Image 1: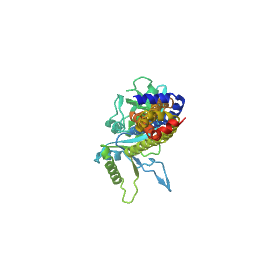
Image 2: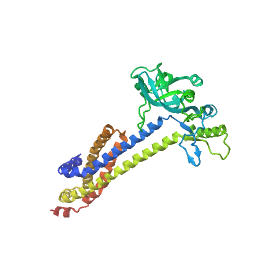
Image 3: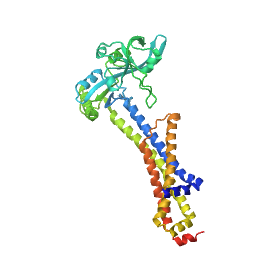
Image 4: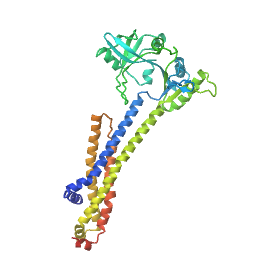
Length: 406
């Protein structure tokens, strides 16, 4: 405690110089915490956005048409049917359930209110596949799908625009002048990380969408894509192989003929993007750590100056019995205290800046206790690393030469 008190007295005797010396550590620690918080927030946003597709997901889409060497957009072909979706659910071991999709957009009307939104035709299994839940009412049934019933489930944004704060269940809306009865409303999900509103949609039975709402030129029996949910995470790869094998068989594709469909493994995409976000977080932290190195060099320079200024003091200490180890510990303690004080201030600034970024810029940030502990430990390490040379130099001074110094 006496050594620490002496170190604090020495630092306080030159407040301005001590503050300027700590500035590199303050900026470095603050930058590391802020950059890591931003990187972690970005990684979480990516994971959250991709989790909206569902868990253990694969997406089967028609291969783009190839006309005179020019390939069309992904999913623009018409090679997948509703029967393909049912076959994948019934004739594969690794697939838990499937949900076909037919997509379009339309102006929706209720009374004097109207709203343009996306229309998705699917089956009841889309709730489990996409991890959706119901806020009121219920999902339409398989019987509704078989009969092509004019019923629908709406998202919260559509409900708000058409009905305000009233319960929409059992109300009748018009989609392209066709009356549909609202049987349920999904739970609010909000916007994803790309700013897309995840509650601005209407779900209808896939057969109803095919027969009544499909765009002109679309075959009546086709679907735009098939969402496939594997039984568990370990089954995703085997499910992908089974999907390819069964669809090639159903589409009568002989050996050597390219698939007329594409299978996208969303689990691999999610892991790849999350890994990329984590790497970016580490790179941001590494770049910010350079300022810690600069701060450490500043500490070493000032401590060397301090040794030169206090040479006579060191000679007096040794003359009255101080051992070289006592002098080393004294100057090393001063360097560590200087570094830790800078680290503490830097942590406070880093936490404050991270919260300000979330509040005013709108970026998600995650401040972890682990990053704070690492920053504090690293600042102490910087003090020891860059304070050792000045402390060693001070402890090796000759007492007689030191006492002669004016």
